[in-house]
Amino acid sequence: MQSQIMQSEPIETIAINLTDAGYSGLFLSGRHNLSDSIWQKGENRIYLEQIVQSSNYSDLTRLLASEILYEKVSHYPPEEWEDNLAYVYAQALAITGSETGDFQILGNQWGFMYHTDKQGVKDYGTLGTHLVNTGKKAIPYLTKLLDNSEIIFYEGSQEATLGNSLRYRVKDAAAFYIGKIAGIPVKFYEQNADRDAEIERLKETLKKNNWHE
Image (cartoon, rainbow, N blue to C red; front, side, top):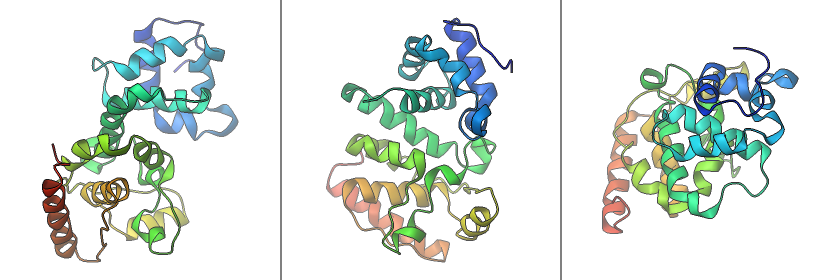
């Protein structure tokens, strides 16, 4: 990817540059991250907003555009975008799965969830925080992930050791965030069979409250 992007570049080129940079290139490369190059001091804001709102772009591209807007725009997002962003951030969790997402999004962006929650620490990570901010509109989208057994991977040194030892699956994370949004206690277990039984209990609770639709 070119290190600099011309001002007010056409939307299709911006979308390509977002995907080429990926989450790591945009936000995790220190002083040399690429989000500033795409943002162009706000010149490309309108294009980023259009990408977030359009189903013509991939879920990853829409997520990355939204994350730049979160970083650069105070009072983002508009309240009327909640349903749109609920979908985008739920899909971000789906593509965190090892098979679907090809490691484009890692568990680090979702925090340690149950592990830190047990210690009384709220650790949703950047993406988890933005997901929770969309409120109950996210529940139907997250409910669709409660059968997704793909593994979530963490990177780094201590983060990877801890995160990967927890063996989180996408559906474990979906259940965690549904619980936080809906105010439903969700217990975490070491064994997958016990986790799955807890997820089935959560599904029944959601059906009773019509939150699955």
